[in-house]
Length: 128
Image 1 (cartoon, rainbow, N blue to C red):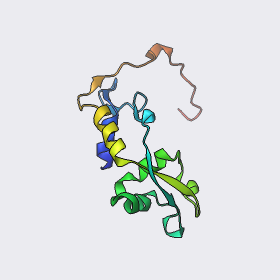
Image 2: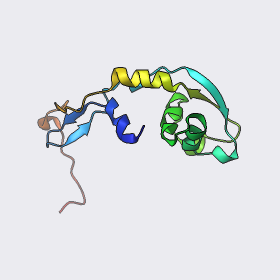
Image 3: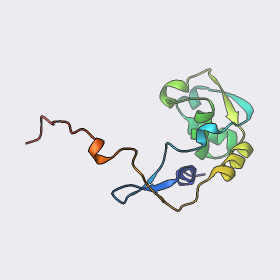
Image 4: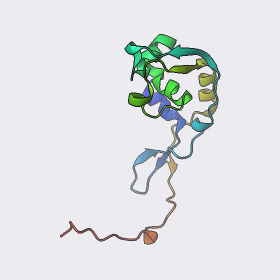
């Protein structure tokens, strides 16, 4: 699954200036509860490399993000260290979740949470 496929978790919206954006706030991805199917002890070859762990576990480099999310890892350069044992999530559970929660590609109109009049201008000392 590529990065583009993962974007299906996020509803597309049209911003006030007409751009199509992904709505990263209103998503179900944080509700994903996957079973752990195995454990993996990180060795020197896998330090800082969730993509290689994904390749070893699933035969694909594309699920490093899922392993990180399942283990609450935010920074792979710090949290993938030698000796750490991480959980490998179930791809079957992930695909079931994905198919239940993917969004369609039709953008929805974006309604800002504030009005332009509510924005307080800040003096910019570098402006002329």
